[in-house]
Length: 62
Image 1 (cartoon, rainbow, N blue to C red):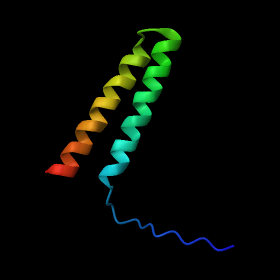
Image 2: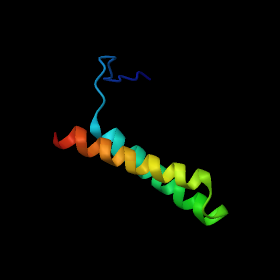
Image 3: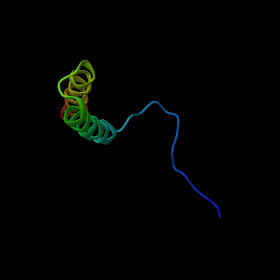
Image 4: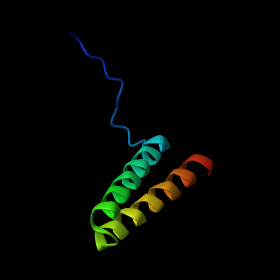
């Protein structure tokens, strides 16, 4: 089997990666909130979710 990946190291980060990562952080923060309540980790994951959504909006629309 041969695998062909069209990836390069040119320094370009697609905005969709920020959106996917923010969804991941949102799911993790929800699971952590249900498991242990409002802790420092939950707040940190929520802040990362908002930060990555803002980065997505900035990269996508500006």
